[in-house]
Length: 234
Image 1 (cartoon, one colour):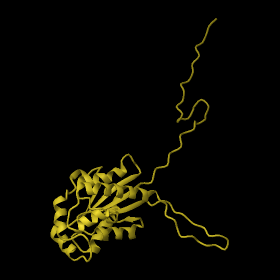
Image 2 (cartoon, rainbow, N blue to C red):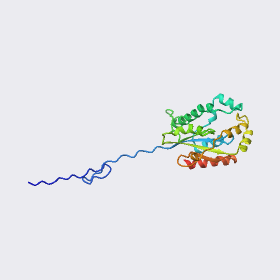
Image 3 (cartoon, one colour):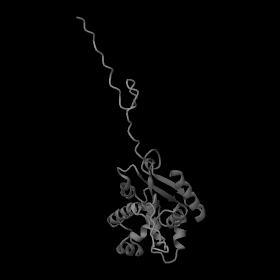
Image 4 (cartoon, rainbow, N blue to C red):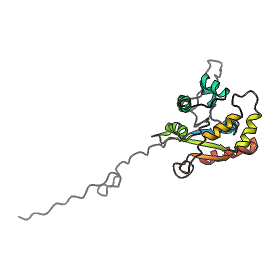
């Protein structure tokens, strides 16, 4: 009595058609990609135009803006008003608070004003913002690193530093022209002494997150230049 070998076709991978039965096995459903959110840190020494640029970006991009100086402790403000440079110890809690407030802003849904109908008022909500603008001198690499922590292990968030660059002489003249601001002109020199200009790894390559802007010109020109580099990075 003869026997014949029985052969079995190899199993078909789940993502490929099964030629034996003509059916196609189900494939995995593509996962939606996360929207990338952005923290835009407007940085540079006193007088470079951080507030002016931040307010302009806020108007043009329609995203929230946090003025970094408002998060300083009264003790820090008093020290600066007295001409005393802030120490690293003075800045740590301020930087951490600013970082956490930026993250909180990105997760907070803005609430529109209530609309009244003949029956009942309703409140509409919009999604959380896609970005937030903060002002912070961030003169040293380690200060920038504190803010960079916001994006650690997060593929859906990027931190950018818009670095406003101008000469010490130009910024001294600007600060002298301010009325009622606690930052005095002689503090500009102190800030330039503390300034650690962004290095190549901060400016270039995949990890480069510093966007340089020439801030030596008129305010309108600086605003337009800043908007251009921000839109180019979005």
